[in-house]
Amino acid sequence: MAYNYKKMPFNLKIYPLEAILNACYIFADKAYFYLDFEGKRSNYLSVFLRLKNKNVKSLSFKGDFLGEVIQQTIRYLVSKRNKKIREYIVGKALYATWPATDDQLGDSNKETVLGYKKDLMQIATPWEEKHKSNASKNRKF
Image 1 (cartoon, rainbow, N blue to C red):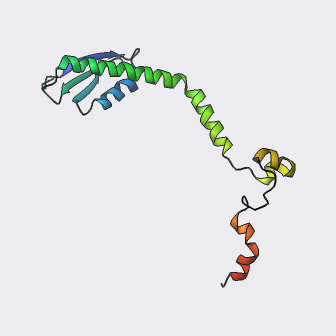
Image 2: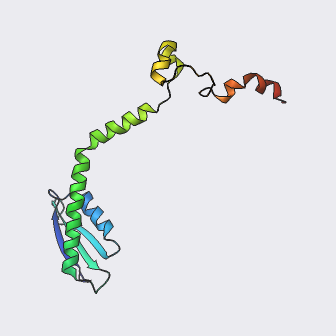
Image 3: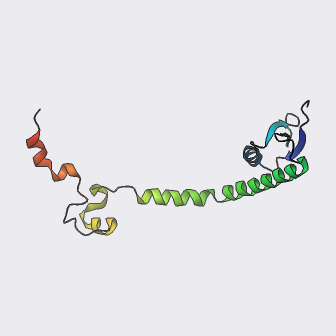
């Protein structure tokens, strides 16, 4: 490497690639990164970094970067572990907002499922149904 990059090897069995890439993204404003696998089937990823600001000490930056990689690794593992529960919660939330039709509910279940007794003021009635007779009279074409 001709540009004086500092090398930081990472074992991909310990640190997921996504976590390393996220850490590189977070520090992209402070350093230049070059990533390279050590061999074709290697479990090691070398991150070569060079600071953009030469006044910053590279040792403290490497520590900050390694701390961010560890933080992103934990975030990735927690996210992976909680994936099914997140999908379940989002699915339940979306299912609750799905509009039910009269065919699915039937007249007897309409009150209990939708949570209202009778729409006396026709708030839940679409505009077209309320003004069906007026709309056909006013049509000029």
